[in-house]
Structures are given as C-alpha cells and as structure tokens.
Image (cartoon, rainbow, N blue to C red; front, top):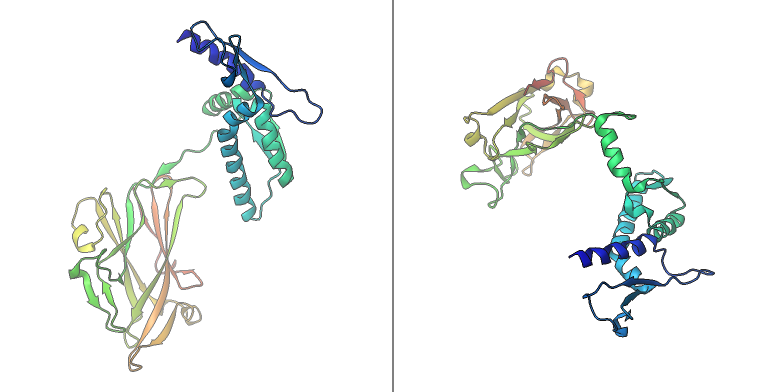
Length: 322
C-alpha cells in the first residue's frame, strides 16, 4: 500500500505540470516514475517500463485527462448556449478548485473561450479557493450571507373537469358533458404545487393556472373554483375521497362576473354556440395565481380573463397560514 501511495504522489507531480502536447517551439517533456521495489517488472519496453522507470508519453497523459476535461468543456459550452438563448452575453469565466491550476485544462478552456470571445480567469489560490469561500460564506465574513430558502409545506391542487382517461381516472368519475358530449372526469384534482418544492426569497413559488368555466347565459354569471391544500404525502386525485381527511383544507373561491365592469368583462368571457347550434353557453376565462412565500404563507389570487384583472375589491386574495 505504501508503494502505491508513493507512485501516486510521483504521478501527481506530472499531472499537475502537464501542459498538453508540445506546441510550436516547445521542447517535449520526458516523464518517468521510479517504480518501487516489488512493483511491476524492471524492463518491459512494450508498456513503457525501462530500467525500473515507467515512461509516460504526452498521448497517454492526454488520454488520462480526456474524460474529465471534455466533460467540463461540454458543461461550459451548454451554459454559454443557455445564457445566450436569454439574450445575455458571457464576458468572463472564473476557474476555481485544484483542477483549474492545471495548464492543460486552462489551455483547453481558454481555446473554447476564444471561440466565444470571452476571458478566462483563475486565482492564485485555486487549490483552496472553494474551501475558503465556503468558510467565509458560512461565517458571513466579507460577504453577504445568502437568504435562507424553504420548501412548500403542503400540496396545492385545483379541482378541474379534465377529459376522461381510463388510465388516470376511475369509472365512477366519468360523465358526458351536456354541451359537447365529451366524456370528462368529475371531482378531479389537478395538483399544481408539491409539498417540498423549493421556495426561494427572490422567486418564491408562483404558479399561474388558466381556468375555463361554462356558464348558462340565461343564469347568473357566477361560479366557484375549489382549491385543495393537503398535508398528506399521498396525493389522492379525487375531491370526494380527500376532503374529509384530517390535514386537508378546502378553499372555495367564488366569483361573480356581474361585479366586474362591462368593459373588462368582455375580456374574460365569450358567448359560444354548441355543435347542434341550438345550445349556447358563456365560456369564462380566469386565471388563478398561487403564491407560496418562504414563511409558508400562501395566497390564492383569482383574476379575470386574459387581461388578468384581479377581483381584488370584491374577491381579495385568500391567505392560508402554515
């Protein structure tokens, strides 16, 4: 075991100093490792062992580096493409960690950087930079400690009538839509947020869900949206099964389009004629915005139509504490 550690220590010296194959004007580097007694054969030229020394060529060194270097280059390339897809420009890459001190790796990243026309920088203490940074960040010395994240404390779902699917719904949920005859599933819960989802102070969790309701044009333009908040790990998909269980909260969001000015109401519903052309209904479009804060507080904001006019005055946001 000691002999193997000794060989590894000698090899690491060559690995850290490896710059790649000699470029124009550079002299080739001869690398050899003195094999300890009892390790391998004294002479085996076919494997690069001569007089008890293992000779390592440039090609062999590059082969050893290939997987880790190419993997890092692919990662950098993917990140650059992703940033550019957001109409942003990369100006510099900072290398950190022990591997960044290797000249071969630094050359490869620099070659990629030149093709994209940005700089590559590395510090003088890259070997310990990651550890130092972690300690400083943890202590809050010379830097601002990042705000704490949290996770969603419960599952949040909305009851919607989805198109019936035998692999997803049970037979007793099936019903035929009276307007178009399409089979749909009643009492189906569409889970929007899962318990344990990451909540950050900057982005929080904000989910926007478009909801379409059908209302008889002869009746009052009113309706109800049902939101289910569940603390259970098992997320049942039927309202009738889950609503009586402890740890489940049902929130009813009632709406009445007559309470919205006519000029805005036109943007959230339309008169639709059925397939038989003798049946009409109002198709109401709303948007439910579900927001979860790092404190666990949740707001359910019902908005009207494509213009996203909040029902704030008559239907304030519902806040659900932890």
